[in-house]
Amino acid sequence: MLHKLKPAKGSRPSRKRIARGDSGRGGSTAGRGVKGQDARSGPKRHPGFEGGQTPLVRRQPKLGGFNNPNRIEYEVVNVGVLENQLDAGTYDVADLRKARLARGKRPIKLLSQGDVKKKFNLSVHAASSSAKSAIEKAGGSVTILS
Image 1: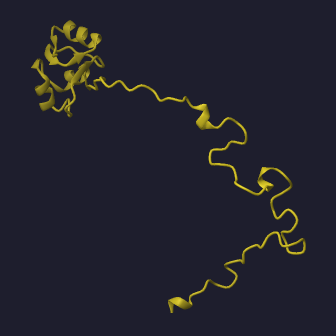
Image 2 (image 1 turned 180 degrees about the vertical axis):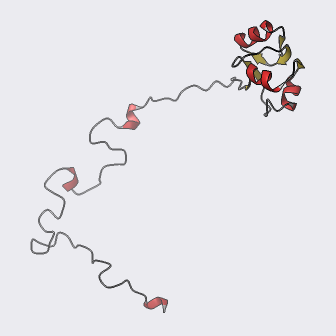
Image 3 (image 1 turned 135 degrees about the vertical axis):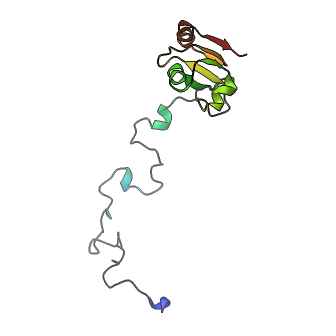
């Protein structure tokens, strides 16, 4: 019967009844030690209290940072990836997405990681100066879309 279930004998010690006189295990200071903040009655320390050290919350700057509302997050395509996955030719943003070099809907930016030897004529939203010079050095061109 569920209502008759009880824990095994000895598995649940009875609670310690403190501060019931010196003869009753836990008299005198009642397990609180001698003096000090922990020995006193009343509210205890709040969460985040660091023993008198300036708490972390107060050491942090009062105001948060600045998030630029006009920031543009680009999808990155490296020239080395173009060299490895595409043939020489003319490509625009739609072609790069079709070739799965850019998978999202964000504007595309060309970066210069890797080498390029093929002649590419690219139309992208942005390009680093080193990527642009690498493409032009290989005989191609980069057109920046507005």
